[in-house]
Image 1: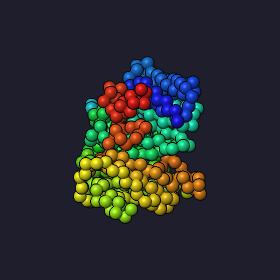
Image 2 (image 1 turned 90 degrees about the horizontal axis):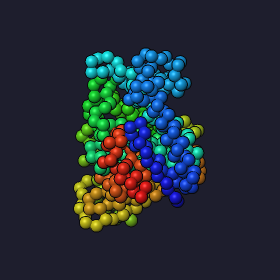
Image 3 (image 1 turned 90 degrees about the vertical axis):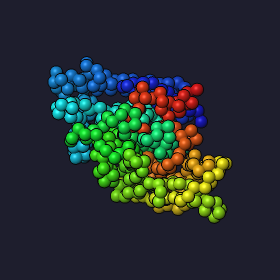
Image 4 (image 1 turned 60 degrees about the horizontal axis):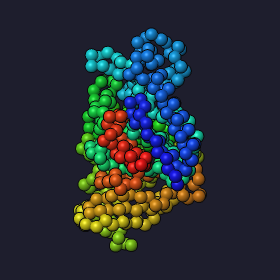
Length: 253
Length: 138
């Protein structure tokens, strides 16, 4: 089957899409639609752009009602995530000086890619933004390799996915960029958390929230219906988590 | 076949398959776990492919093929998925097995994408995803 692969950098990260069985004009159009959508999201939500709606909102220059309606949608998602995670996940992050800094990036990425996937208009594709992805197919499953957080040149697992999303949070590439919103501290003991579920919006939020929780990640992930997860600990041992169960997958037994 | 499976169990470090499927009628997740573990490694120079027998799970038969080179698993392929069972058309397909191996080699794992801690545009250059993309674009 013809496979077409596209790569472009938007929002400071690589966007990759693979389409199977799409003729070239359709594939090109789908790719443009995805990139246009992600660029629009970046213009509205980027915390790196002084003129984005989200930056102006953060400085108090505009109110939520002045912004595009998607801003309210994202803030609402952030509030739901805050409650669901017992405040470990928040769009208000504590700064080094103890003040709160407004940063909805943790919600925006998964939500944006899930939205962009809706613009593809072809049934067989995989769309990834910096390692988090949406898969769709009625054919053979997409094979998603889970990068080993302690050795990014290797894989720790492979997840075949037909229709769903895979998100991984960890410290491997950006250094330690996830902190517990309650304390501002970087969680210890965890190397990465991968969540597989029906939508990237929630898979991404759950992966980030669970990582921020540190040791209590497994307990919390087990309480997430419809999602299954792979937790890699700092010592290289792993836990597969599905709702209501835990499967230790460590070596040496 | 029995001999092959015995060999498999003593040479493969660990392969865990987690099966959990959500069906529209269940609304919740049920799960079966198939775990193959092993003890001491028996190093061998050649690459061997071992096909396990079809295992019955709650959702139907599952069959796995493992490629081992020396003492390392270099590939894990699921040959048969429960969702191929026409009796269970309602299986929601985001929940196929998660295959865990300590020694999975990215080069031969036959993957389409890589999921990892957020890759920035700078970090991308050294990533497995970039290598995959380069191969796929070429």
